[in-house]
Image (cartoon, rainbow, N blue to C red):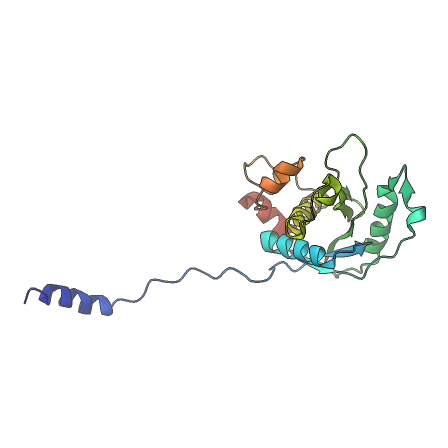
Length: 212
């Protein structure tokens, strides 16, 4: 008889509805507009694919891998480095091909050549807000450039973060001051690695608003 109260409680509990499940997290980006990502002399396609997947997961934006852009590097070099302005013009030209209603936010070129100047520790992107274009280089965020063993998994995350930060600049988002938000803009490689890639609610909301 001592078990009767527990039995009654169990029977009463069976009549109660189960608590509601939390809403599922979208498996794919929810934005309607998109960004076109153009490989420019990218030898590691898997790294670019991982970077795009990372950027989509953190932002729920749509990054579409476009056809590679062929370039004649002899005409693209300046001072021993890739001419960022020349590469940018290629992306501006691609962005201008978009028709009204296409929903293109920006054209972003990705290359593995150095586009930085000697005084910068991490120069990985240049942007043109008015031209709806950007160029992201993974040269200075690669282990190989530091004389270390290649780490493609780590490189994919680094490039994904650079894609997101370049997107924010193209869309005109201000630099964030919320600790932990990627858009605080880490400028050193250890800080870039330490960043999770997460965005604060305000920055994520601004991206989603721009993409609809």
